[in-house]
Amino acid sequence: MNIKAVVLLSFLLVAVECGKILVFSPPNIVADVNQGGGPWWDKIHGLNYTHSFGWAETHLIASNDSGKTWGLLNFSGDNCSTCSDDTAVFGGVFDHVGTFHNLGSLNITNISKSNLTTMASLSSTRFFLKDSATFTGTGAFMRSATGPVSITGLPHLRYIRPGAGASLKLPDGSMVASVIVTLAEGRPLLSTIALRSLDNGFTWRYASIIAACAEVPYAVEGPSESALALLANGTIICVMRVEGQSGHYAPYISKLSDDGGQSWHSLRSLSNGAGCVRPRLLPLNGSLVLSGGRPNPISRDVLLWLNGNGDGNDWEPYSVSYWHNKLVSNDSWKFPPAATNDSRSFPRLTTSYTSLVATGMNSGYVLYGMGVRSFTLPFTIADSS
Figure 1 (cartoon, helix red, strand yellow):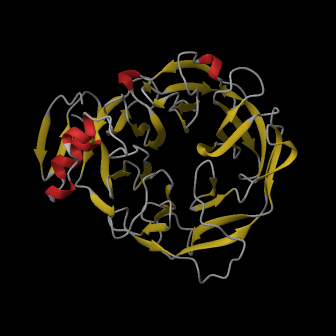
Figure 2: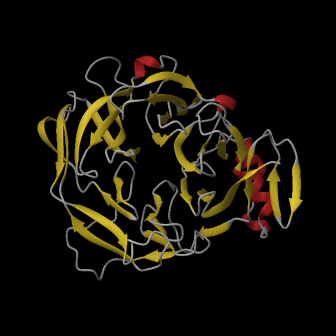
Figure 3: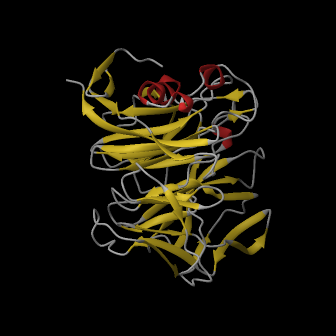
């Protein structure tokens, strides 16, 4: 996967390139056949640099040591009858440092199922730590019922799917979210719209179309699963899937916003064939890390891409299966080469749906599935010199 050189140093392997690089540490197991979970691993979030949690499709899991070890998270004894365990994004937002709330159970409140203008929930659930005021502190995972959520001003949509987008808090305190929809007019394919909130993610209003299916006429799906981040210059970037199954695979696209999500410009396909399902973005000290995978019809690989300058232009690829296999100590935990990069079989070895979590100013991990198991692969951004 475009690895230019390999260096062995203190049990860490480094892909040597120009400028900034990713340095990987040995993977940690998250779940196996006994713990279960997956195969969609895109709902894990960090509440601080040590504590992370999220929905594993059948139960909640959590880590209090930066993703090294994991266990089941059970809130059954908290007597919160209106709380839920949903942690999908955009099924939730970080409303303050170290606190995350979901959207509750959104229902249509105006017009009809195929003519959507308004959605709302009666309450939502906030997840936090006992000492969440201290960003790097320790404490128990907690949840509580919090306020209702509403989405208004939707442009008579034929379809909306809030769960596979993203949300982002801006420097002025406002928030922007990206959401999958089918627009009122045009082909009945997917598009991505932007919502905005001025009250920490409880009241949302339609703002703009980020990318419509008409803008990618080659795609059989349309702009859908998405990720949001701020570039080094303060511009918002939205990275989107346009197709990634049934023989149709294309790189991610991106668009930019200079006005807080009110308008979008500069549609482009990402460099180095970066794609093509469920993108996730993580800003780290002026750089951006992107995760995803399934880049072509025969590859099920999970990949990371590093945009060292944080400008959204050049994305250097790193094969997760390659580094996982180089660093893992248990041979039975290795990615099988044929099933990873030369297979059209179903079910896929991995869905390539991932979570990205920061563990420091320059470090994080990617969480991914592989067969009946899932892992975290820790990484650090370093200077190649």
